[in-house]
Image (tube, one colour):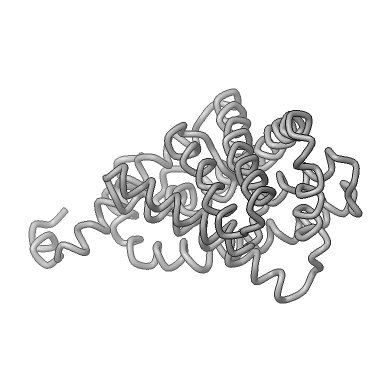
Length: 267
């Protein structure tokens, strides 16, 4: 990097550069993992989110408060952070930035997205079966909570809920990489859970696990085909929101920093 460029940069730009370097350094091994590693971390991601959903349903059942339930869900996001597992919607900033930097290909990205989404759902489905067997008192709450999403309809309003959900979870990833403090990262996870789950935004994996909990009770007005149609709508909204509301703007600012030194270091 030219010394004159370093002089021209203020503290804010230097922090952006450092965050961009951390993003590519993390994204390169994530996109080049073996199939075994990718499947295992994605299954764990579904289980970690399932722990948060279990806490969410329990608090919602006991208190009736959506905000407190959303706060309880933060357990799942903290588990993702500290356990280094993989969540589908966390792949909208770091992996895309890594591809833009030239350290991986679009095929690597599609491989990661598809595998992580499927394995998140498989791990979460199995975990929620255990939860529903362990806590039969939660059946009514689970069935009602799942129907709220699956029977929500396919309107501009629900698409915006999914779009906002994708943007918020990607913002969490951005905040994680903008701070070297673990306290700051955990705070970002807690506040994101409050906004995402507490305000009822649509998230393809989180809300699928809630829907699975309901389906495991056998008391839902919806079935697996209804859930699949809902999932397609939610995934589309999450991707659009994650890429447009956060990732694109982030890349516009940091792309000149990532396509130079970082791309060369990955070659």
